[in-house]
Image (cartoon, rainbow, N blue to C red; front, side):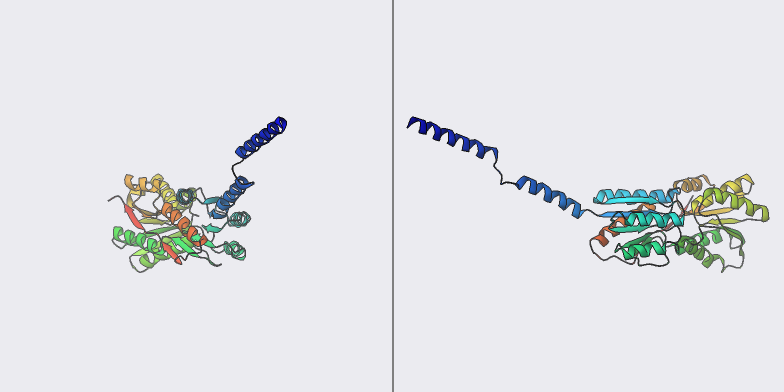
Length: 316
């Protein structure tokens, strides 16, 4: 009898130890961890951003604004730099679409050339938002940008006022085919073409590039007897024009207006080397793009055009 009692005691002790070692239901820990991982993956939003070029400080600020807003919102963002090449941008967008993005943000290098890439996104069921520059086709959920036509008009009005509505003007145009080129030029001509005393004696593309702005302006100076004002479609070209005018001793007698209000341009305005620049807010454009992307991914409605306010920056 004592042997049976001892065996019963040992069996009871063993059952108590086994029970203490496992207080959860079998598999409960693994199941909970698996559900948590799947939930965080399902809830994440992945955004693709195709930028025309990161050689321009304006678009660096736009990218930084977008990436900061995405990080704050807990979204994943993948950025591609097209380096101002339309074919590179098409390839970049195809790569982004292969990465299972939920929303595509596009800052087109060429508004017409980008259409086929946007249509690829449409076919893949990926909603597209254009940023700063519009596209000529494809299905776009919304466009986020400043009013480039209004900005061009702002520049034209400032130049007309500074010159007393009389003088010879030079226009440095952006990349042919870019919506910003067309729209800023349209706004500028809306004003100056209606004033008899103002004449655009030269207009030529410098592709939104500072070194090209310098070269193109030097060539124009060689063929023009009198230059009273320069309107450049962006600050990089305006700063190139400033260099050319300075080296030829013509800067003090010419009004120079740019577009974008980059840090270099603002400094040039404060120093009196440039007269004005039309201020966009690239970081805010990037932030608004991420906000819109989050709403689109959540199937919320957004406006077809989301404007970002402009202002003229002068030394006064």
